Image (cartoon, helix red, strand yellow):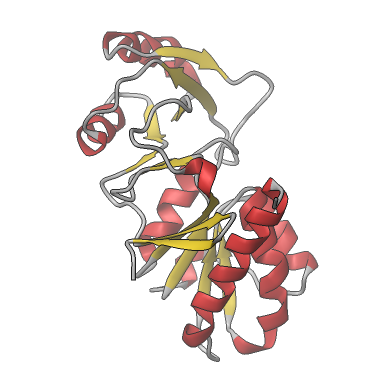
Length: 225
């Protein structure tokens, strides 16, 4: 029986195999944040002479990339990337995701928007029939915390401030439990339009292109191929 850590490693290795054909002297790879992304970063160090650089979705990931000698570029210097690789807290079969457990959701969404493909790497426990068991992270400008919380309550959510945490952008996170997510795209747009919300952790309007899900019997690809 493989441990969760071994499954995460399996997913990270599958992503490294996936990106290899895209590597070249002008290639920039987008890199996410979290424990599975950390393993991808560690493996990516083997290819540091075969790419131009990386773009990180958090200060944490940027520091890990730099420790491995991988160049970290400012996104403003990058016009496009073939691939962005990141994990998820939940993903459904439609490749909609909840992200932001690590608090980097806004930068993750920005970096992913510049990439041609979003490859989600996770273990099989993250695959769900319907999103929402994992509380939805929402990045909020501090002065709007209570106003946003009230609006989220009107949507059926119970917002809790993530204590002792400030995002890389200097904002707070509300973790919202109890939301019924029948239409992820519509809910994402609704929450993002609340004044004071920077972005929410629903990645549905622009979901994953491909999910590599590690299982006890190997890596499952969604959509299948």
